[in-house]
Image (cartoon, rainbow, N blue to C red):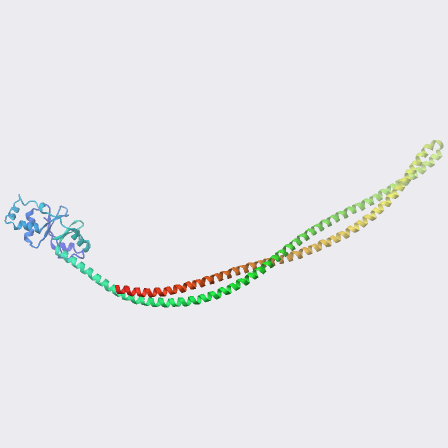
Length: 436
């Protein structure tokens, strides 16, 4: 049998807040202890109500209770018989279950376990599953009473806190109710003013929207006319460019005609040279025919056939000379016509050049006007778009004003409900505080 001094119990219990030095009792026996020695413990300590029984690992297996042992002690022969090794060697028949709990558990949980186990004489406390000490039923009842007293004090303090909080809540609710009533009145007044301003703003915005719509229509018409004018100027510019191109082609054609006329004049001069050569040849042939006729006359009958030939040659010479004169006349007329054509071509070329120059000036002027017209049309279109945006924004302002007016009406209704709810809250708070 192992025993531990009370000082050891106090030392082992020093780290448990609720366990005092005189609460625990380390008296215990092992399961193999003879029964008469356990009974001696009860005999020496009349206040002992239970004696814990542990195994070889110091783990509790139950306890010996005073009510069972006293029956043996009151028997005049029982104590003597128990000292006989044949009868008092085993205490297993007297070991009963006992409530067990870890000493480190909180007091409320220890008490709950004690009650759940239907404890009546005391309880065994362990540390890490090993026997630590035994605590009496009286101390457990005292701990339960102290715990209930602590809980009662906590509840009383909580009640006092609730009462103080209730009074503070009552004051705050009263102040809040007054503030809510005042706020509701201010909201209602602001809602009325907002509704009036929204109505005025909506009327003004509608007037501005109507004016903007009319101005937008006028600007749109101006922009359309500007676009048409720009299109017409663009068409004029295109036609002027085409006329300038045609004039340039005409100048080129006239230039080529002048070149061909110059070639024709040079050809006519070449013809004059050829005709002069023909005339010279005809004169020489005529002279040869004359000499041949003279020689044929001198020859007499022998030269008669040669005379016929000479006469034919002379006739051909005259005909060639006459043809050459005719050609010279025609060539002269042709040269005169070529000169007239050349002069006409020069005048036409000058006129066409002047037309081309004027076409270029017209094209530049039209291009400048077209650019300006396009700019006017674009600016007018932008102004029309801006006017449309202004109209849209104005309509949005009017819609917002109408919405604000409806919102102000809703706010007025909410303000009235807020005032009613504030009064109801104040009444319910008073009822709650009375019940509390």
